[in-house]
Image (cartoon, rainbow, N blue to C red; front, side, top):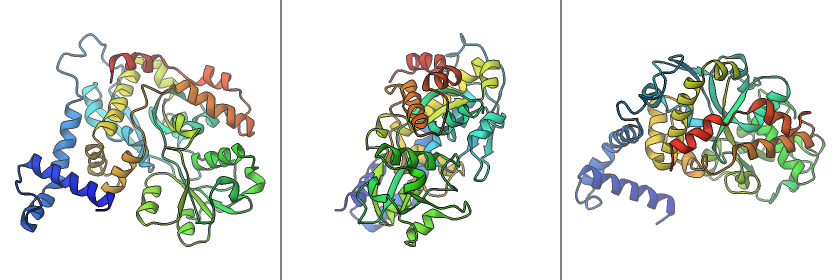
Length: 372
């Protein structure tokens, strides 16, 4: 039995036993009954997963109430950032009553600009975006690492490494020329520089931000494509191209956070209790993504953030959401800042970025409180 089909069968069988449907698999009638109520079961399981993380009544009595009961978070098309989008109940338990989800601006605008302008209070985003923004004077305070992986580089069958892309056309989501400031473009440029290529001279970039590079790659008009969820999940499901590089498993990128939690500096300064409470909710949601991926994926779909449960679930299975306690967030900032500096993307040193744009006090407290 193919692995994918076997996993689905096991999931359905597990569900049937939990739902009390004996004889699952013995007849089409019992299987149909199980599948018809599978979604309802997943919703119940998702609620149970969140409920298990809610603090008991009075558990936070010794902690001050948040300075504000309003919190603004982004709606991100990159579903790998889902911990920030499945937090409503957890945020309510932390004392927030006005929870707002703000749509990200269309490209070529950088999503991190939302944070710098104060349009959102906290957000999960690509580490390099925050670092480039800090170098350009766009304020942000990095608070914690969230997950590892998400970007996957696809190419044709005759490309077996990044060096083979020299002189070829490459596409990334919503990007113009190198230096445009988007996460995928920055990462692919760093990958190219890591193997001795000049990303501005050796790679042929799509210059029209209105182009849809994924569609061009599918049509064979682009030689390589670097995507983030749910794009890699779709390409893999459709058996299009071959994986050249996967940041979830390939070194050195798999040894550092891809996305990190950051706050608007003014919000963090004025509302330290609210910042810690919101960070706790997001990191608990990150734990849920690792411990109950099916429930977390269902919550993302039920919240209207993505239409495809299968792609959301595969995203959680493909990437590591259980590393925020283990990996060193400051090492991630140092790793990316050094490479961005060497590649000429930023002028600031890693030490300056860390000194001006990080605050690990909440993370250190929450690591102690939320032990695995």
